[in-house]
Image (cartoon, rainbow, N blue to C red; front, side, top):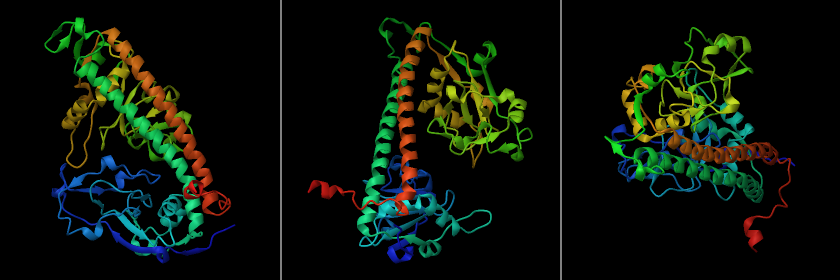
Length: 426
């Protein structure tokens, strides 16, 4: 079975670019939320928590506000990422680099088309109308002209229902991951900021420091500890664009640090000869990797299976032995909001923050007693193990969904026999 196709324009009720307004309007207590391209994940999920707020005249932008069921498509940057807006407790404006499409619901199911445009075929079609030499973008007119498959509406519902089950399971696991990460952060602050660690009642505290604990800068710690170091990735003169290959040793760049993990989906590689030449930049388990530019609030702890990866040109790495400061304890110190704010305050650059080894070496580290660190590391490893299991489950669900999606979208699989929720209820 294969579906007939129609111009996308035939099933659009309304469309518009996101509006522009002054950056001075942004405010934490703003009355309107703004959806940016950076608030969209590659699969089209919307991160409601990261949307900034602004104080603006709602009447002026009333025609631009998103409604439940609207599609938004990124027109620049990560071109073609398509999301479905499902509501928020404040009015939401799409950003200037998003296009809003409101579909004719008598012919089109919005979730079906969100899934379609994020499929391989949908992405190819969107990218086929991208324009621009230095910075490619898509516009409303060209997207409206695209041919898209149009199954009967009941089939659209069934296909969307099947695929949404995978997305729902992934979203549930992601919420559990978020709760675990939040619990880990709160445990760190409880023990090491508020000093309510196990047995704290019997430990004297002087000048805010429990007995048996100490303070050192990271630089002092590195200078006095064998195997401890802060190191910048290779310079551009050491690692050129032509050195990158399709396989080999992975090279960690800032864009590969996502969600405090090193992600492999877009990672670059070098051959073994180049990796051996840059052996001093190899990463070892429990090394901590930072971006040198841009979003310097990110960091990642190197996992055992990432042993031997290379620290890339745009990154720095911190290497610590297990004593006197366990790398996992220091990793949590670096993730604490107060420390993130301090590091960003030290960074250099007006338009893009730049981090240096000297800034990292100046970080003041709290070195707890050995027994407190050991108990904390045990708890953190349990959190991370649970998170790893959930992430593996999500990766498997995403692979299964992505294998199924093109077969459903092309009509290769017959879904006419799959009952809809309302049919099951009846």
